[in-house]
Length: 152
Image 1 (cartoon, rainbow, N blue to C red):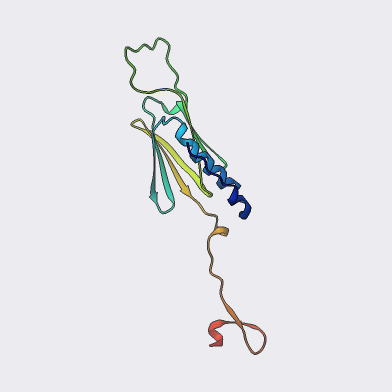
Image 2: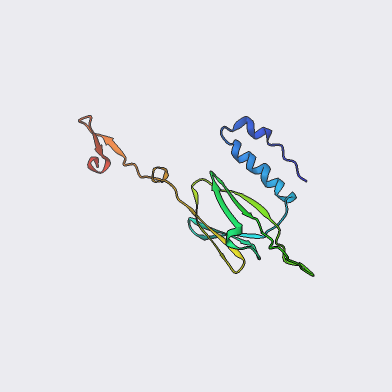
């Protein structure tokens, strides 16, 4: 296990508490179980797909919840009465996986197909947060602001 001392960073940063918490959580991931396996892929400039292998689960046994900046995928498998196996190699145990989302990431949808749960994610930056061009003006001899092209 690795221990990181982040205290020197606390002295020179303001408002990065959440990032440091995420770093601590990332170190703890090694200790967590790897079930169910998953992939995260970038499908476009502002879109992503989380794919989880959930063989044996029905759509009604799966839950995808986005609360704040946390995505939680839960699977609760209901066992029918009288279910009996000689050998069980397909893991059908219940699970709960959480993922920390970046700002402005929204869940666009989820679907289950061939034992794979696909969760579509999209970055939607508000219009107020997008970069905008500000025109540069110059003050002319009259003391009034004029567009820079009119001065030249």
